Length: 431
Ligand code: SDX
Image 1 (cartoon, rainbow, N blue to C red):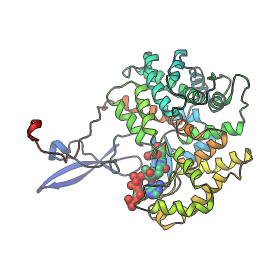
Image 2 (image 1 turned 90 degrees about the vertical axis):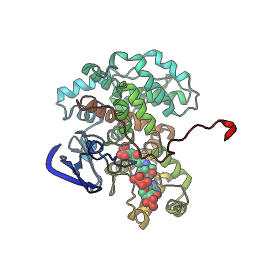
Image 3 (image 1 turned 180 degrees about the vertical axis):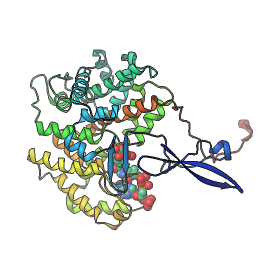
Image 4 (image 1 turned 90 degrees about the horizontal axis):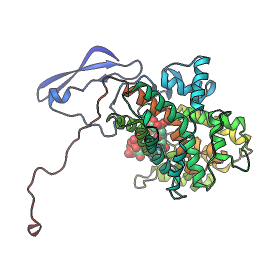
Protein backbone atom coordinates (compact mmCIF):
# COMPACT_ATOMS: atom_id res chain seq x y z
CA UNK A 1 0.00 0.00 0.00
CA UNK A 2 1.28 3.49 -0.70
CA UNK A 3 1.42 6.17 1.96
CA UNK A 4 -0.52 9.10 0.45
CA UNK A 5 0.96 11.74 2.77
CA UNK A 6 -2.76 12.51 3.25
CA UNK A 7 -4.24 12.28 6.72
CA UNK A 8 -7.74 12.15 8.21
CA UNK A 9 -8.36 14.52 11.12
CA UNK A 10 -10.54 13.19 13.91
CA UNK A 11 -11.60 15.76 16.50
CA UNK A 12 -12.83 14.46 19.87
CA UNK A 13 -13.66 16.82 22.74
CA UNK A 14 -11.81 19.58 20.95
CA UNK A 15 -8.66 17.54 20.48
CA UNK A 16 -7.57 16.68 16.94
CA UNK A 17 -5.97 13.40 15.94
CA UNK A 18 -4.22 12.90 12.59
CA UNK A 19 -4.68 9.44 11.06
CA UNK A 20 -2.60 8.36 8.04
CA UNK A 21 -4.41 7.50 4.80
CA UNK A 22 -3.10 4.72 2.55
CA UNK A 23 -3.97 4.24 -1.11
CA UNK A 24 -4.43 0.74 -2.59
CA UNK A 25 -3.67 -0.41 -6.14
CA UNK A 26 -7.45 -0.63 -6.67
CA UNK A 27 -10.43 0.33 -4.48
CA UNK A 28 -11.02 2.96 -1.79
CA UNK A 29 -8.34 4.59 0.35
CA UNK A 30 -8.05 3.31 3.92
CA UNK A 31 -7.60 5.23 7.17
CA UNK A 32 -4.96 3.65 9.37
CA UNK A 33 -6.52 3.47 12.86
CA UNK A 34 -3.94 1.10 14.36
CA UNK A 35 -2.78 3.79 16.81
CA UNK A 36 -6.21 5.36 17.42
CA UNK A 37 -6.85 3.77 20.82
CA UNK A 38 -3.36 4.70 22.06
CA UNK A 39 -3.74 8.26 20.75
CA UNK A 40 -7.38 9.03 21.51
CA UNK A 41 -8.56 6.33 23.93
CA UNK A 42 -11.47 5.33 21.69
CA UNK A 43 -12.38 2.25 19.62
CA UNK A 44 -14.07 2.26 16.22
CA UNK A 45 -17.36 0.36 15.95
CA UNK A 46 -18.19 -1.72 12.86
CA UNK A 47 -20.08 -5.00 13.55
CA UNK A 48 -20.18 -6.99 10.30
CA UNK A 49 -17.09 -5.08 9.12
CA UNK A 50 -19.06 -3.22 6.41
CA UNK A 51 -16.47 -0.38 6.41
CA UNK A 52 -13.40 -2.13 7.77
CA UNK A 53 -10.33 -3.53 5.97
CA UNK A 54 -9.03 -6.39 8.11
CA UNK A 55 -5.75 -6.82 6.22
CA UNK A 56 -3.89 -5.95 3.07
CA UNK A 57 -3.83 -8.54 0.30
CA UNK A 58 -2.62 -8.98 -3.28
CA UNK A 59 -4.76 -11.97 -4.23
CA UNK A 60 -8.32 -10.96 -5.18
CA UNK A 61 -10.11 -7.67 -5.82
CA UNK A 62 -13.86 -7.07 -6.14
CA UNK A 63 -15.43 -3.89 -7.51
CA UNK A 64 -18.93 -4.19 -6.09
CA UNK A 65 -20.26 -1.24 -8.05
CA UNK A 66 -19.04 -2.49 -11.44
CA UNK A 67 -19.58 -6.17 -10.66
CA UNK A 68 -15.94 -7.02 -11.34
CA UNK A 69 -13.84 -9.82 -9.79
CA UNK A 70 -10.05 -10.05 -10.37
CA UNK A 71 -7.74 -12.86 -9.28
CA UNK A 72 -4.16 -11.51 -9.27
CA UNK A 73 -5.47 -8.93 -11.79
CA UNK A 74 -7.13 -11.38 -14.18
CA UNK A 75 -10.95 -10.92 -14.67
CA UNK A 76 -13.00 -13.92 -13.57
CA UNK A 77 -14.82 -14.21 -16.90
CA UNK A 78 -11.49 -14.59 -18.73
CA UNK A 79 -10.27 -17.20 -16.24
CA UNK A 80 -13.59 -19.09 -16.39
CA UNK A 81 -13.50 -19.02 -20.19
CA UNK A 82 -9.81 -19.62 -20.95
CA UNK A 83 -8.19 -21.19 -17.88
CA UNK A 84 -9.00 -24.16 -15.67
CA UNK A 85 -9.17 -24.74 -11.92
CA UNK A 86 -5.67 -26.03 -11.23
CA UNK A 87 -4.12 -23.24 -13.28
CA UNK A 88 -6.20 -20.75 -11.23
CA UNK A 89 -4.98 -22.53 -8.07
CA UNK A 90 -1.38 -21.92 -9.19
CA UNK A 91 -2.23 -18.27 -9.92
CA UNK A 92 -3.82 -17.74 -6.51
CA UNK A 93 -1.00 -19.51 -4.65
CA UNK A 94 2.04 -18.11 -6.45
CA UNK A 95 0.83 -14.81 -7.95
CA UNK A 96 1.29 -15.37 -11.70
CA UNK A 97 0.05 -17.69 -14.44
CA UNK A 98 2.36 -20.73 -14.74
CA UNK A 99 4.57 -21.64 -17.67
CA UNK A 100 3.71 -24.94 -19.33
CA UNK A 101 6.45 -26.68 -17.29
CA UNK A 102 5.34 -25.08 -14.01
CA UNK A 103 1.74 -26.12 -14.67
CA UNK A 104 2.72 -29.69 -15.51
CA UNK A 105 4.80 -29.98 -12.32
CA UNK A 106 2.02 -28.46 -10.21
CA UNK A 107 -0.69 -30.72 -11.64
CA UNK A 108 1.53 -33.76 -11.13
CA UNK A 109 2.12 -32.80 -7.49
CA UNK A 110 -1.61 -32.34 -6.89
CA UNK A 111 -2.45 -35.62 -8.64
CA UNK A 112 0.08 -37.50 -6.54
CA UNK A 113 -1.50 -36.24 -3.29
CA UNK A 114 -5.16 -37.03 -3.94
CA UNK A 115 -5.31 -40.16 -1.75
CA UNK A 116 -5.90 -39.88 1.99
CA UNK A 117 -4.34 -41.98 4.76
CA UNK A 118 -6.21 -45.30 4.78
CA UNK A 119 -6.99 -45.00 8.49
CA UNK A 120 -8.95 -41.81 7.81
CA UNK A 121 -11.66 -44.02 6.32
CA UNK A 122 -12.54 -44.97 9.90
CA UNK A 123 -13.51 -41.40 10.77
CA UNK A 124 -16.48 -41.54 8.43
CA UNK A 125 -17.84 -44.66 10.14
CA UNK A 126 -18.22 -42.70 13.37
CA UNK A 127 -20.93 -40.55 11.73
CA UNK A 128 -24.57 -41.50 11.22
CA UNK A 129 -25.26 -42.20 7.54
CA UNK A 130 -27.68 -39.28 7.47
CA UNK A 131 -25.11 -36.81 8.83
CA UNK A 132 -24.86 -33.71 6.63
CA UNK A 133 -21.67 -34.05 4.52
CA UNK A 134 -20.54 -30.65 5.83
CA UNK A 135 -20.47 -32.10 9.37
CA UNK A 136 -18.28 -34.91 8.08
CA UNK A 137 -15.98 -32.53 6.22
CA UNK A 138 -15.48 -30.25 9.23
CA UNK A 139 -14.54 -33.29 11.32
CA UNK A 140 -12.35 -35.10 8.83
CA UNK A 141 -10.47 -32.01 7.58
CA UNK A 142 -9.76 -30.95 11.16
CA UNK A 143 -8.48 -34.46 11.84
CA UNK A 144 -5.99 -34.21 8.94
CA UNK A 145 -3.59 -32.57 11.40
CA UNK A 146 -3.43 -35.93 13.20
CA UNK A 147 -2.24 -37.66 10.01
CA UNK A 148 -0.19 -34.98 8.32
CA UNK A 149 1.68 -33.54 11.29
CA UNK A 150 4.78 -33.33 9.05
CA UNK A 151 3.11 -30.37 7.26
CA UNK A 152 1.51 -28.66 10.24
CA UNK A 153 4.39 -26.43 11.41
CA UNK A 154 3.33 -22.99 10.20
CA UNK A 155 6.83 -21.61 10.80
CA UNK A 156 8.42 -23.95 8.24
CA UNK A 157 7.99 -22.60 4.68
CA UNK A 158 8.38 -26.09 3.17
CA UNK A 159 5.73 -27.56 5.48
CA UNK A 160 3.43 -24.66 4.59
CA UNK A 161 3.90 -25.47 0.89
CA UNK A 162 3.18 -29.18 1.44
CA UNK A 163 0.05 -28.34 3.48
CA UNK A 164 -1.25 -26.21 0.57
CA UNK A 165 -0.72 -29.03 -1.92
CA UNK A 166 -2.23 -31.67 0.37
CA UNK A 167 -5.37 -29.62 1.10
CA UNK A 168 -6.06 -28.74 -2.55
CA UNK A 169 -5.43 -32.36 -3.56
CA UNK A 170 -7.36 -34.14 -0.81
CA UNK A 171 -10.47 -32.02 -0.36
CA UNK A 172 -12.24 -33.50 -3.43
CA UNK A 173 -11.42 -37.00 -2.18
CA UNK A 174 -12.81 -36.20 1.28
CA UNK A 175 -15.92 -34.53 -0.19
CA UNK A 176 -16.54 -37.54 -2.43
CA UNK A 177 -16.05 -39.89 0.54
CA UNK A 178 -18.57 -37.84 2.55
CA UNK A 179 -21.04 -38.24 -0.31
CA UNK A 180 -20.43 -41.96 -0.76
CA UNK A 181 -20.76 -42.56 2.99
CA UNK A 182 -24.07 -40.66 3.07
CA UNK A 183 -25.57 -42.90 0.37
CA UNK A 184 -24.18 -46.16 1.69
CA UNK A 185 -21.82 -46.80 -1.21
CA UNK A 186 -18.14 -47.82 -0.88
CA UNK A 187 -15.45 -45.19 -1.20
CA UNK A 188 -13.96 -44.85 -4.69
CA UNK A 189 -10.24 -44.17 -4.94
CA UNK A 190 -8.93 -41.30 -7.07
CA UNK A 191 -7.40 -42.08 -10.46
CA UNK A 192 -4.19 -40.46 -11.66
CA UNK A 193 -5.24 -40.61 -15.31
CA UNK A 194 -8.15 -38.21 -14.79
CA UNK A 195 -7.99 -34.42 -14.44
CA UNK A 196 -9.10 -32.75 -11.22
CA UNK A 197 -12.78 -32.23 -12.05
CA UNK A 198 -13.21 -35.56 -13.86
CA UNK A 199 -11.56 -37.32 -10.92
CA UNK A 200 -14.08 -35.77 -8.51
CA UNK A 201 -17.02 -36.88 -10.67
CA UNK A 202 -15.46 -40.35 -10.90
CA UNK A 203 -15.05 -40.61 -7.10
CA UNK A 204 -18.65 -39.49 -6.61
CA UNK A 205 -20.44 -41.50 -9.28
CA UNK A 206 -18.38 -44.63 -10.03
CA UNK A 207 -19.15 -47.84 -8.15
CA UNK A 208 -17.01 -50.99 -7.90
CA UNK A 209 -19.43 -52.72 -10.24
CA UNK A 210 -19.36 -50.02 -12.90
CA UNK A 211 -17.06 -47.17 -13.89
CA UNK A 212 -18.72 -43.76 -14.35
CA UNK A 213 -17.86 -42.45 -17.79
CA UNK A 214 -17.19 -38.75 -17.32
CA UNK A 215 -18.75 -36.62 -20.05
CA UNK A 216 -16.18 -33.94 -20.97
CA UNK A 217 -18.89 -31.25 -21.03
CA UNK A 218 -19.90 -32.12 -17.46
CA UNK A 219 -16.25 -32.22 -16.39
CA UNK A 220 -15.77 -28.77 -17.94
CA UNK A 221 -18.84 -27.44 -16.14
CA UNK A 222 -17.61 -28.95 -12.88
CA UNK A 223 -14.18 -27.37 -13.36
CA UNK A 224 -15.86 -24.03 -14.10
CA UNK A 225 -17.87 -24.26 -10.88
CA UNK A 226 -14.64 -24.92 -8.97
CA UNK A 227 -12.99 -21.91 -10.65
CA UNK A 228 -15.91 -19.56 -9.96
CA UNK A 229 -15.87 -20.39 -6.25
CA UNK A 230 -12.08 -20.35 -5.76
CA UNK A 231 -11.56 -17.10 -3.85
CA UNK A 232 -13.46 -13.94 -2.97
CA UNK A 233 -11.47 -11.40 -0.88
CA UNK A 234 -12.18 -11.34 2.87
CA UNK A 235 -15.62 -13.05 2.93
CA UNK A 236 -16.88 -14.55 6.17
CA UNK A 237 -15.19 -17.95 5.83
CA UNK A 238 -11.88 -16.52 4.60
CA UNK A 239 -11.90 -14.07 7.51
CA UNK A 240 -12.55 -17.05 9.80
CA UNK A 241 -9.51 -18.86 8.37
CA UNK A 242 -7.37 -15.74 8.82
CA UNK A 243 -8.51 -15.20 12.42
CA UNK A 244 -7.94 -18.86 13.31
CA UNK A 245 -4.51 -18.76 11.60
CA UNK A 246 -3.51 -15.63 13.53
CA UNK A 247 -3.23 -17.72 16.71
CA UNK A 248 -0.73 -20.03 14.99
CA UNK A 249 -3.19 -22.91 14.66
CA UNK A 250 -2.21 -25.56 12.12
CA UNK A 251 -3.51 -25.12 8.54
CA UNK A 252 -5.85 -28.14 8.69
CA UNK A 253 -7.62 -26.79 11.80
CA UNK A 254 -7.91 -23.37 10.15
CA UNK A 255 -9.45 -24.79 6.97
CA UNK A 256 -11.89 -26.82 9.10
CA UNK A 257 -12.92 -23.52 10.74
CA UNK A 258 -13.49 -22.03 7.27
CA UNK A 259 -15.66 -24.99 6.28
CA UNK A 260 -17.73 -24.54 9.44
CA UNK A 261 -18.34 -20.87 8.67
CA UNK A 262 -19.14 -21.51 5.00
CA UNK A 263 -21.93 -23.91 6.04
CA UNK A 264 -24.25 -21.07 7.09
CA UNK A 265 -27.22 -20.31 4.75
CA UNK A 266 -26.23 -16.63 4.57
CA UNK A 267 -22.90 -17.72 3.07
CA UNK A 268 -21.95 -20.95 1.33
CA UNK A 269 -25.06 -22.78 2.51
CA UNK A 270 -27.12 -20.49 0.27
CA UNK A 271 -26.75 -22.79 -2.75
CA UNK A 272 -28.54 -25.59 -0.90
CA UNK A 273 -31.09 -23.14 0.57
CA UNK A 274 -31.67 -21.62 -2.87
CA UNK A 275 -32.52 -24.91 -4.55
CA UNK A 276 -34.78 -25.86 -1.64
CA UNK A 277 -36.50 -22.48 -2.06
CA UNK A 278 -36.95 -23.04 -5.83
CA UNK A 279 -38.41 -26.45 -5.07
CA UNK A 280 -40.77 -24.91 -2.47
CA UNK A 281 -41.91 -22.30 -5.01
CA UNK A 282 -42.44 -25.19 -7.42
CA UNK A 283 -44.20 -23.36 -10.26
CA UNK A 284 -43.87 -19.96 -11.89
CA UNK A 285 -47.36 -18.88 -10.76
CA UNK A 286 -46.25 -19.02 -7.10
CA UNK A 287 -43.35 -16.59 -7.55
CA UNK A 288 -45.37 -13.44 -6.60
CA UNK A 289 -46.22 -15.02 -3.24
CA UNK A 290 -42.55 -15.50 -2.42
CA UNK A 291 -41.52 -12.08 -3.72
CA UNK A 292 -44.11 -10.60 -1.35
CA UNK A 293 -42.73 -12.62 1.55
CA UNK A 294 -39.18 -11.46 0.76
CA UNK A 295 -40.39 -7.84 0.94
CA UNK A 296 -42.38 -8.33 4.15
CA UNK A 297 -40.40 -6.93 7.09
CA UNK A 298 -42.32 -9.17 9.48
CA UNK A 299 -41.34 -12.28 7.52
CA UNK A 300 -37.78 -13.54 8.03
CA UNK A 301 -37.90 -15.17 4.57
CA UNK A 302 -35.25 -14.00 2.13
CA UNK A 303 -34.76 -14.92 -1.50
CA UNK A 304 -31.84 -17.30 -1.21
CA UNK A 305 -29.24 -16.78 -3.94
CA UNK A 306 -30.02 -13.06 -4.08
CA UNK A 307 -28.09 -10.13 -2.69
CA UNK A 308 -24.48 -9.65 -1.67
CA UNK A 309 -22.54 -7.65 0.90
CA UNK A 310 -20.15 -6.27 -1.73
CA UNK A 311 -21.70 -6.64 -5.18
CA UNK A 312 -24.31 -3.91 -5.65
CA UNK A 313 -24.70 -4.33 -9.38
CA UNK A 314 -24.21 -7.89 -10.53
CA UNK A 315 -22.23 -10.94 -9.40
CA UNK A 316 -20.00 -11.71 -12.42
CA UNK A 317 -19.86 -15.34 -11.37
CA UNK A 318 -23.63 -15.70 -11.67
CA UNK A 319 -23.49 -14.52 -15.29
CA UNK A 320 -20.97 -17.24 -16.21
CA UNK A 321 -22.87 -19.88 -14.22
CA UNK A 322 -26.10 -18.98 -16.02
CA UNK A 323 -24.41 -19.89 -19.33
CA UNK A 324 -23.14 -23.15 -17.85
CA UNK A 325 -26.61 -23.99 -16.57
CA UNK A 326 -28.01 -23.68 -20.09
CA UNK A 327 -25.19 -25.83 -21.56
CA UNK A 328 -25.43 -28.59 -18.95
CA UNK A 329 -29.21 -28.81 -18.97
CA UNK A 330 -29.28 -28.88 -22.78
CA UNK A 331 -26.66 -31.66 -22.80
CA UNK A 332 -28.68 -33.64 -20.26
CA UNK A 333 -31.88 -33.00 -22.19
CA UNK A 334 -33.45 -31.27 -19.21
CA UNK A 335 -33.44 -27.71 -20.55
CA UNK A 336 -37.14 -27.67 -19.76
CA UNK A 337 -36.19 -28.34 -16.13
CA UNK A 338 -39.05 -26.80 -14.12
CA UNK A 339 -36.59 -25.55 -11.50
CA UNK A 340 -34.63 -23.71 -14.19
CA UNK A 341 -37.86 -22.21 -15.52
CA UNK A 342 -38.77 -21.03 -12.02
CA UNK A 343 -35.22 -19.71 -11.50
CA UNK A 344 -35.20 -17.71 -14.73
CA UNK A 345 -38.69 -16.28 -14.12
CA UNK A 346 -37.80 -15.49 -10.48
CA UNK A 347 -34.65 -13.70 -11.62
CA UNK A 348 -36.62 -11.71 -14.23
CA UNK A 349 -39.35 -10.81 -11.74
CA UNK A 350 -36.95 -9.79 -8.98
CA UNK A 351 -34.76 -7.72 -11.30
CA UNK A 352 -37.81 -5.70 -12.34
CA UNK A 353 -39.24 -5.23 -8.87
CA UNK A 354 -38.56 -1.78 -7.29
CA UNK A 355 -37.80 -3.37 -3.91
CA UNK A 356 -34.96 -5.47 -5.32
CA UNK A 357 -33.77 -2.67 -7.58
CA UNK A 358 -33.66 -0.17 -4.70
CA UNK A 359 -31.85 -2.61 -2.41
CA UNK A 360 -29.58 -3.74 -5.26
CA UNK A 361 -30.53 -7.39 -4.89
CA UNK A 362 -29.77 -9.70 -7.84
CA UNK A 363 -28.65 -13.32 -8.30
CA UNK A 364 -25.31 -14.17 -6.70
CA UNK A 365 -22.97 -17.12 -7.24
CA UNK A 366 -25.29 -19.46 -5.35
CA UNK A 367 -28.34 -18.87 -7.52
CA UNK A 368 -27.41 -21.01 -10.52
CA UNK A 369 -24.79 -23.35 -9.08
CA UNK A 370 -27.39 -25.53 -7.39
CA UNK A 371 -29.36 -26.00 -10.60
CA UNK A 372 -26.25 -27.25 -12.40
CA UNK A 373 -25.20 -29.52 -9.55
CA UNK A 374 -28.64 -31.04 -9.25
CA UNK A 375 -28.72 -31.69 -13.00
CA UNK A 376 -25.37 -33.47 -12.64
CA UNK A 377 -26.90 -35.81 -10.08
CA UNK A 378 -25.74 -34.29 -6.78
CA UNK A 379 -28.16 -34.09 -3.84
CA UNK A 380 -28.62 -30.60 -2.35
CA UNK A 381 -26.63 -31.69 0.71
CA UNK A 382 -23.52 -31.88 -1.51
CA UNK A 383 -23.78 -28.32 -2.86
CA UNK A 384 -21.96 -26.63 0.02
CA UNK A 385 -19.27 -29.35 0.29
CA UNK A 386 -18.52 -28.64 -3.39
CA UNK A 387 -18.34 -24.92 -2.59
CA UNK A 388 -15.95 -25.79 0.29
CA UNK A 389 -13.60 -27.90 -1.83
CA UNK A 390 -13.55 -25.13 -4.46
CA UNK A 391 -12.82 -22.42 -1.89
CA UNK A 392 -10.03 -24.37 -0.18
CA UNK A 393 -7.47 -22.86 -2.57
CA UNK A 394 -8.70 -19.36 -1.70
CA UNK A 395 -8.60 -20.04 2.01
CA UNK A 396 -5.13 -21.59 1.86
CA UNK A 397 -3.74 -18.88 -0.44
CA UNK A 398 -4.94 -16.19 1.96
CA UNK A 399 -3.54 -18.23 4.85
CA UNK A 400 -0.17 -18.53 3.08
CA UNK A 401 -0.13 -14.77 2.41
CA UNK A 402 -0.95 -13.95 6.02
CA UNK A 403 1.42 -16.44 7.67
CA UNK A 404 4.24 -15.19 5.44
CA UNK A 405 3.61 -11.56 6.48
CA UNK A 406 6.13 -10.46 9.17
CA UNK A 407 3.49 -8.00 10.46
CA UNK A 408 1.14 -10.93 11.16
CA UNK A 409 -0.20 -10.76 14.73
CA UNK A 410 -3.04 -12.43 16.59
CA UNK A 411 -6.46 -10.96 15.73
CA UNK A 412 -8.16 -9.62 18.83
CA UNK A 413 -11.16 -7.29 18.19
CA UNK A 414 -12.45 -5.07 21.02
CA UNK A 415 -16.13 -4.31 21.81
CA UNK A 416 -18.74 -1.74 22.77
CA UNK A 417 -19.64 -3.02 26.26
CA UNK A 418 -23.28 -2.42 27.26
CA UNK A 419 -23.46 -4.77 30.24
CA UNK A 420 -23.65 -4.20 34.00
CA UNK A 421 -21.12 -2.06 35.86
CA UNK A 422 -19.33 -3.74 38.78
CA UNK A 423 -21.63 -5.11 41.50
CA UNK A 424 -21.17 -7.41 44.53
CA UNK A 425 -22.21 -11.06 44.79
CA UNK A 426 -25.40 -11.62 46.80
CA UNK A 427 -25.96 -14.90 48.71
CA UNK A 428 -28.91 -16.84 47.40
CA UNK A 429 -30.99 -16.31 50.51
CA UNK A 430 -30.83 -12.54 49.92
CA UNK A 431 -31.86 -12.57 46.23
C1 SDX B 1 -21.90 -15.87 -0.59
O1 SDX B 1 -18.92 -12.27 1.08
C2 SDX B 1 -18.81 -13.02 0.03
O2 SDX B 1 -18.01 -12.75 -0.86
C3 SDX B 1 -19.68 -14.24 0.00
C4 SDX B 1 -19.62 -15.08 -1.26
C5 SDX B 1 -18.27 -15.70 -1.46
O3 SDX B 1 -17.96 -16.04 -2.61
O4 SDX B 1 -17.57 -15.96 -0.44
O5 SDX B 1 -19.93 -14.28 -2.38
C6 SDX B 1 -20.60 -16.25 -1.20
O6 SDX B 1 -22.05 -16.01 0.58
C7 SDX B 1 -22.96 -15.23 -1.46
C8 SDX B 1 -24.21 -14.80 -0.64
C9 SDX B 1 -25.06 -16.03 -0.42
N1 SDX B 1 -26.17 -15.74 0.51
C10 SDX B 1 -27.43 -15.71 0.09
O7 SDX B 1 -27.79 -15.82 -1.08
C11 SDX B 1 -28.46 -15.56 1.21
C12 SDX B 1 -29.48 -14.45 0.86
N2 SDX B 1 -28.81 -13.16 0.88
C13 SDX B 1 -28.87 -12.38 2.11
O8 SDX B 1 -28.84 -13.09 3.29
C14 SDX B 1 -27.98 -11.13 2.06
O9 SDX B 1 -28.20 -10.55 0.84
C15 SDX B 1 -26.48 -11.28 2.26
C16 SDX B 1 -26.18 -12.00 3.55
C17 SDX B 1 -25.88 -12.01 1.12
C18 SDX B 1 -25.90 -9.88 2.30
O10 SDX B 1 -26.36 -9.29 3.41
P1 SDX B 1 -26.07 -7.71 3.70
O11 SDX B 1 -25.23 -7.07 2.69
O12 SDX B 1 -25.64 -7.64 5.13
O13 SDX B 1 -27.46 -7.12 3.46
P2 SDX B 1 -28.47 -6.83 4.61
O14 SDX B 1 -28.72 -8.12 5.31
O15 SDX B 1 -27.98 -5.67 5.38
O16 SDX B 1 -29.77 -6.44 3.77
C19 SDX B 1 -29.87 -5.15 3.22
C20 SDX B 1 -31.36 -5.01 2.94
C21 SDX B 1 -32.21 -5.45 4.12
O17 SDX B 1 -33.40 -4.69 4.09
P3 SDX B 1 -33.51 -3.40 5.11
O18 SDX B 1 -33.23 -3.90 6.50
O19 SDX B 1 -32.46 -2.42 4.62
O20 SDX B 1 -34.92 -2.91 4.92
O21 SDX B 1 -31.73 -5.88 1.86
C22 SDX B 1 -32.62 -6.86 2.32
C23 SDX B 1 -32.54 -6.87 3.84
O22 SDX B 1 -33.77 -7.29 4.42
N3 SDX B 1 -32.17 -8.13 1.74
C24 SDX B 1 -32.97 -9.05 1.21
C25 SDX B 1 -32.10 -10.07 0.76
N4 SDX B 1 -30.84 -9.74 1.05
C26 SDX B 1 -30.88 -8.56 1.66
N5 SDX B 1 -34.32 -9.12 1.06
C27 SDX B 1 -34.80 -10.23 0.45
N6 SDX B 1 -34.01 -11.26 0.00
C28 SDX B 1 -32.68 -11.22 0.12
N7 SDX B 1 -31.91 -12.23 -0.33
